[in-house]
Length: 312
Image (cartoon, rainbow, N blue to C red; front, side, top):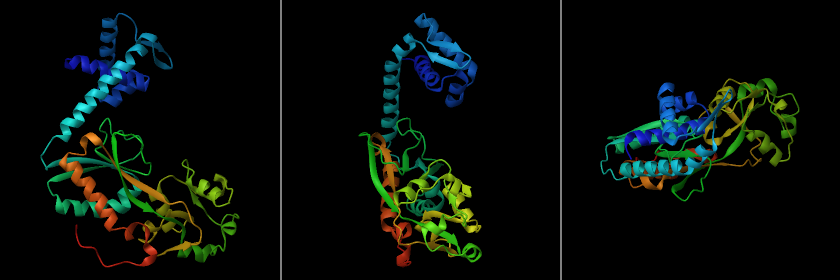
């Protein structure tokens, strides 16, 4: 297969997935005329249209759909080849791309990455603050930290840490609004609740512990955990957050410690093909060990701060 044939397959798949040439061009990082030229050349070679054009976009034709399976198989083969080439590199120096959620990136990762850099100064760590839509097969990242445990057999998965949650408010907020004595009082309409916008975690947990709520109970809504913490510190209201985050802010007061909320679990994930790469393997092993040795920082703030751990 020459490079032009591979480019045609890659562009064909992108147009199918995105539904338009402009969107495919944006995803691929090329111009729309380039995408159009490749599609027209491919259609000329096949002898029929591969897409039906309409105002709403492009829809793959029956002939085009018939080519999809082989095109996807070719793409998977190329991606696997690229992963294996990367995995066979024995050089310790180079970069590793790590995708993490906002919570992990801002509250837990900096100390771990600093310690990793002291031990492996020749490995550059590129940090992508996102765990949504990250495709390890397509090498969007080498490593992924996610709250969703994948089931695919071609992925290597290890448990990173568990994070316990609690209700919190700033002590000055409680002076102004009073400390609620129960969950019923908290949600009676006299308190400012900081809740989620789309992920509905607060509502699901409320339902699980016997409180039926709706978004109308929230004075503020955001899916950003960092923004919720900033609102807490701004004395804006009451929110659910990780105990390990709250312990970083001495003016945050825990409410209802007897209420057991569902903890979050984070998983460290990489593709099996790249796990043998020394850079990726070293970072994965280091992060697993670091989070295990620093458990107190993730979910045991009530037990006090132990002496500083020795560097790994």
